[in-house]
Length: 501
Image (cartoon, rainbow, N blue to C red; front, side, top):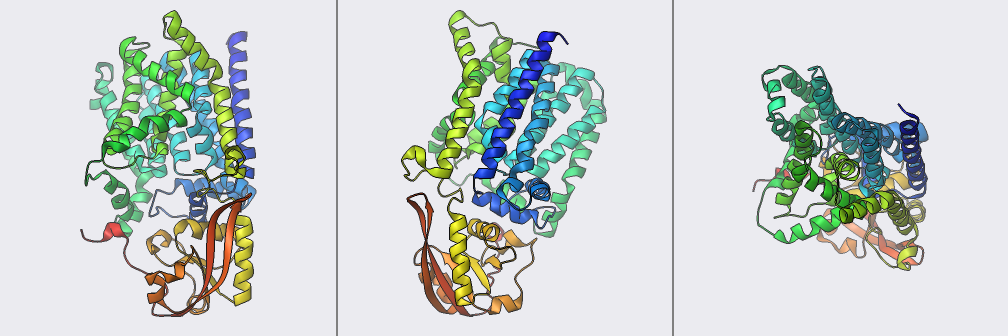
């Protein structure tokens, strides 16, 4: 390694570490989202699967809380630190596929500049581990190509298995890899036992999810795979895809990515198998979600598995392809400012989510999902619970259940009456707790809902509370005392996915 290359590698490492430190600071400052609080509850009762997702997000949170306790920082610390192995995997993949440290370093910087990485690793959801696992899937496949050694297919199997333990979106790696194996140089693997052994390894790693679903009526598969069903066409959702990815990739990385996709198709940099690998890993997922958007909304974070690939494609456009002077100026501008732009966007989002300062303390998209004001709200809820002598707190949805469990004093009985499939891995409140007074934490006039009137003989409003972010009232909360349960307090109705159509 030359002195210049050594400086490049050290500089890249310093940037990645600096961004990790920034995310750790933001992780400690920012209250949990309702999804994070929900997944934190999973982490206290590890299992082979859950109603919504596979278990890897719960494992990540469990490791973090073992290090730093049940705090916002503890929930997120391991997820944020996963940027380090992810960055190494992307660096090594780009180096193997295109043979240059400059391309590899650029891919790492561009990936870490994206909002999907900075926010997606700080806010712990299944997208965090699947993003990292996707990087290692790419790396293992690049090793297969570079070395020609069949044993690397076992590493592919492990990486795909971990990705499947993170999120079901990883199923798309299967067809992407099959497309890649059609390339003339790769076809020999179709008659080799190694890819099939790798598939068995992936299946073995994923098997806890299979066993859990078999024991619970395949409910998780039915819930997630049922989204692919088209009930009616609504192409309006297509219009949301590009703007959301423009933001999640950050604008300058998005531009470089588009230029890189064009270059792979027209300029053809690098070897043919390398280009097909990147195209297959990118387009299989993108085209599916494009089709999905014809009938349903596609959340921006669902594209997380393609971002390691996109970062390498963008780096190819920035460092390998020869562009005309005007195009080169665009590339140079994007490359120079992609990192600073990503830092500014991430910092602005964190400041806004915590304070509301940038919108003049007005309502924005973050106020419902980030638990700002929940520490104070939970303190008021606990005071009311003690005052009325309630044995348990009842929440109307899984997000509020997670928030209350996290922010109320440890050991407080909190449960959601409905959707019991979400809590099947966790112990239920005791019969003694359920027979006592219950405190419902809900929206205004929640007790007027026929569901509660039908379930309890006596409902008494005991307090009106507010959750606030600075001067902004995020939501009004009503507390009602529930007594005289008419039958089982817990509604054990099957989830909608299991009902006959």
